[in-house]
Amino acid sequence: MRVISIAKANPEVAGCDEESGEVRKVNLPLARREFLKGSGLLFGTLVSGSLLAGLAPSNAWALELKKLSTAEGQTLMAMGRVLYPHKRLPDAVYALLAKDLDAKAAGDAASAKMIQDGIAWLNSSAGGSFANASAAKRDEIVRGMEGTAFFGTVRGQCITSLYDNDMAYAVFGYPGSAWEKGGYITRGFQDLKWLPEPSKEASPPPYMG
Image (cartoon, rainbow, N blue to C red; front, top):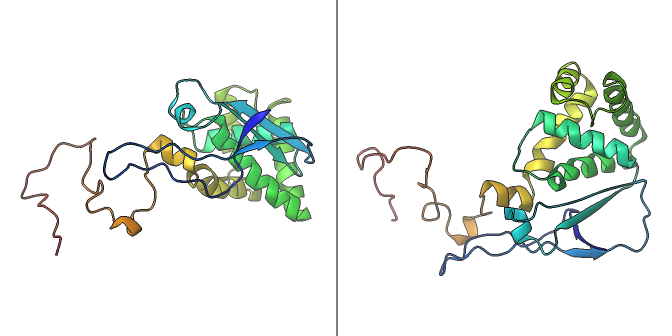
């Protein structure tokens, strides 16, 4: 099966070509799976016709977990959506959260116990499956965990896992680093499409030296 590898790598950031204005396709590497060495497997597909489906070489994605089970990974993905809900972000992005927390669990026994105990608590509070509970019930359960080490660990990991990746960049329109291209002053610094156009007095042309 050909899948999109969503392990952290260095894929080319999708940016806008300075000459033509053409948006480059994200260079998401492909991987061919022969043996599953991990404990769990998360997989899915990108919605056909979506922005990411147009950028990726395949609609299918898959990700191995080393310590956590598939069900535990799905529970973490569901919790991530409660903490940081984005309808435009596909499950593949939330799977990165499960992957990073799985790496913590695989590298430290204390972290593994804390994460797995937290997942068990989520499922127990939901009456069996947190991932399959109603949105209102999931929200209630997560709010009840505020202040716990597990809650803080998952919420903190969400910041980098969900937003520091090329899929999120493409969805939110972030073109990537600009300092090596001269900075943002001439690359969208004043492109505030969601606000009224300011007067020239309020927003004079940039000083270019």
